[in-house]
Amino acid sequence: MSLFSKPKYSTVTVKKKDIPLGLWKKCPKSGEIVYIKELEENQYVVPKSGFHFPISSTDRIRHLVDADSFVEHDKTLRAVDALEFVDSAPYADRLAKYRRESGIDDAVVCGMARIHRIPVSLAVMDFRFAGGSMGSVVGEKITRAIERAREKETPCIVFSASGGARMQEGILSLMQMAKTSAALARLSAARLPFISVLTNPTTGGVTASFAVLGDVILAEPGALVGFAGPRVVRETTQQTLPEGFQSAEFLLKHGLVDQIVSRLDMRDRIADILQALFVRKARGTVASA
Image (cartoon, rainbow, N blue to C red):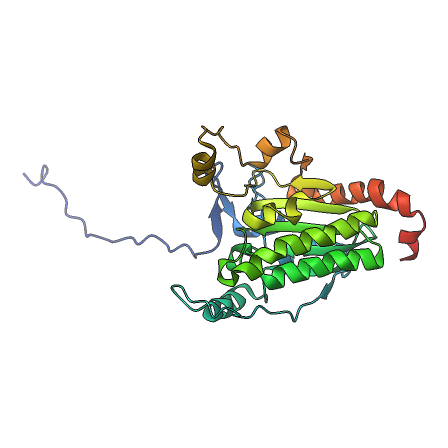
């Protein structure tokens, strides 16, 4: 009978090898699992699907401008809690947390740089800091970047990534819409180009001011661009909204966006536009700058 009896095996528990966290990311578009190092080398663009993950202002500037050409301005400007605003947490505590987690002092980094040897005044918003919201410091720094372009007679480029106005600063935040727009009017009067680049997301007061005032408006693929959310727009207009009506692709089709440009091609595309709008006009100015 032992021939038909089941052999006894010792039970061995095999533990699944732990996979270190933070080494892989899942593409929301294709479901593909991508090695984080590969993403970093590809500017956080998924190689196969082309999906654009958010990117920090530091990384964006590094990939965009000529090596060692960026000189930051207005770094010491810091927001203050003028209204002593408190919701679920004091605004002052929130600011300290944002600075600690993002490593920057507010939601935009500004400075002078060169792109293919063309001097530019650059402002790059960073969604990591308070959702890229525009408070008094963000508005002031972008205004200074625009004024710096006018003073130095260079183009101005702004990369937007924002959830809109910063509610904790109330009317002080809303005033930045008029201030930045007025600065752009002076830049336009000086016949100097302004290139606005819309990234995901660009919404609220940023969309309603400087982001859509570019002489050329570029957008990254799949970027969400709009003023209010779909529900608010639907309730306000009392209309059924088309699918994807706040996507960069929809806005390109309807004329708000001039071109959709992959992050991988952005540096060269901006240089081409500057060659057409600025260098030919300036003639010998760039070479001697």
